[in-house]
Length: 434
Ligand code: UD1
Image (cartoon, rainbow, N blue to C red; front, side, top):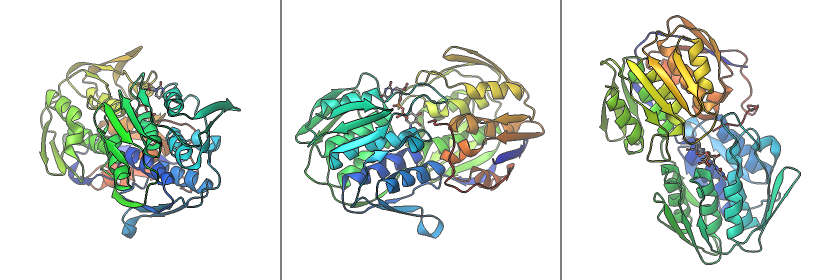
């Protein structure tokens, strides 16, 4: 298993480039199921979750070309001959977003068999709202042997009011409704930029979706969708992680190729912490020359402070003067990183859904291990300012969602290297997380 060895203390200087958004690429790849024509997606990140999704689509009979480097991070997906509309447990347990194929499969193939994901490292994360929504669109759903089996001759438009805001739930049902007969109105939808990005792709494929990015989405069903070429948005979580890295290390870093408008809640919070940032087109410059000050955060659905940035923010809070209260409202068990940060010298007390971070604590290098994707990013950040050497184990969690993070960070002055056997990319992580 690979590990990172990080020696802290270097300010990050220079320009670091952001990859395409994993969480936009995953639903976009699932959207290819909705048509028998090829879908070409650009700005696809070279991360393990994308390989998992490719394996999933291939297991159903899809042809998926995935090219990196000179091929410009592009994938071409053809779902002309889908023979096996099933997402097996082996794949779903490694990546919960596999359940995004449920809606598209029922809509185009009239049936789907998708493993239930079960629990994961950050919480229960059921998919009951996906199922309830599909039933509203007329699907007949049964649960057997840990699988959801859904059938519908043709889905019918319907009125879905989500009990709770769900990102992949909104995406799954939006995809399903594109091929339903008649109009679907979905309310209390997720407003994340990844939802809007998916709607833009679907509309390019011939769907008729209005309102994506707001809490009410209206979809006029069509008989058929066509192929399209589409460029995925930049990854706002990777961008945010790098912005925090610049601030934390007292560096002067330009985070390029990102969409600053998607970083609003984070940049506003960093301003409160005394971090200077400047946005310019598609980049954010972060100047970490001021002392950091404590500030509370509370995770919320977009446009609130993202739960996917909570762990990284906690690493920053350990270096801020004063107490920061971090409240996690989206997932029930998302503080695994806190215990590892404590091993590095942080003062963090977790009480239910709140963690109180008292700073500033000098951190010292230690052996720590990743529990999930964003928790691992938090440990990398902490290691960048720790005294001495930190060895981070289980970095396959990082590789699920960050493209060659060690190379990118080394390019701006971090002392970080990967050690251990280089596993083939298709070997996947045993824990499913965000
Ligand atoms: C997506 C993101 C993930 C991010 C999360 C919240 C992808 C691939 N993943 O995950 O990185 O952390 O949004 O921003 O885009 N819930 C239910 N029933 C359901 C669905 C969700 O109770 O059927 C609950 C979840 O347990 C959670 C909350 O709703 O407490 C929000 O989850 P959701 O938005 O669905 O997260 P994901 O879409 O899985």
